[in-house]
Length: 136
Image 1 (cartoon, rainbow, N blue to C red):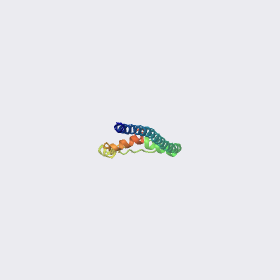
Image 2 (image 1 turned 180 degrees about the vertical axis):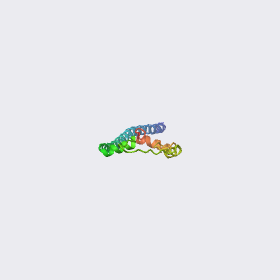
Image 3 (image 1 turned 90 degrees about the vertical axis):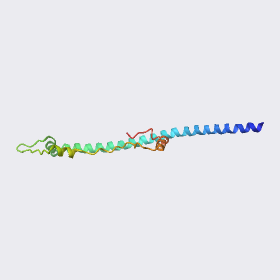
Image 4 (image 1 turned 60 degrees about the vertical axis):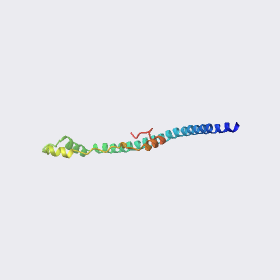
């Protein structure tokens, strides 16, 4: 009789051990996901900060150039068609068909994820926290 009771407990203990293993694994995965997502957020913010600093430096250099008389005159001539007294301005007009062909541009490539992503990429994103942080 005792021998039969011991065999009945073994599957129950194995099921309990499996449930405990699942709980321990889940308890480890979710904080791990958040840690990786937080690190990625910090990395993205640092990259954005560097890009903004570079843009600010470029704009400050442009401000310095725009304060020169030569640049003001160049912009007045190019953008507003202004001329100095005594000068004659000429405007070259191209036919409408040529202008439309010249300005037609190909559509820009997007950085969106491809539609046919394999399912395991989604699983990997879930495990590594990639679904928590977006590059936007």
